[in-house]
Length: 208
Image (cartoon, rainbow, N blue to C red; front, side, top):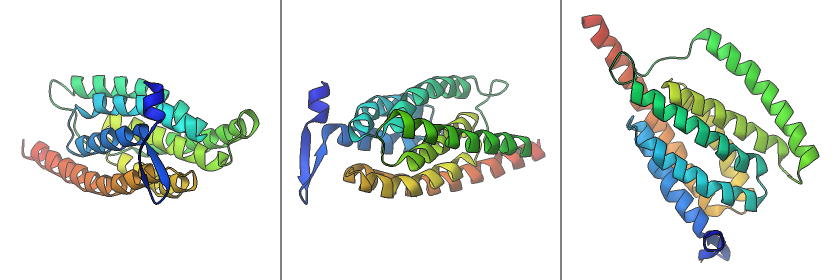
């Protein structure tokens, strides 16, 4: 199975694309689309995507991103449970991140980027330690927000995508870079949809 995923599916302009990239493309795009629609099915599709990318990123030397997928799976299980339980028997509503939460996220984020960059520089042969660490931390914070249905999680995903696109091009992962261009557009769409949902839910609460 691993040999198949690492094998070439097709070649574009002399750049080979593996089956792992193809499966990552399909499951990743499907997952982000479902998140934008607030579908709980995004979580199992996302877990399938994580399993494929563990192999893809490790092969490309993006060790933090590869390890990140394991954490994603744990967060996905928690997020899946959180969305399933909802709030007071109803679907989990879209809400805003509090000032206290932003403060905690900022402290954890900066400290984590510094620590992870240092770890990657010492423990691996990564040539993009800082950028690998930055995207890893942004993605983890965004996943936390997604699990809590904080609309600002889309802003963190957008920031991560803007770094991921040139990073993957640099690593020769052309299809994955293209996928993240699609992710970026889906994130903007998701941001707009979640903001509208939050406003609508707020109006319903006021009417009741």
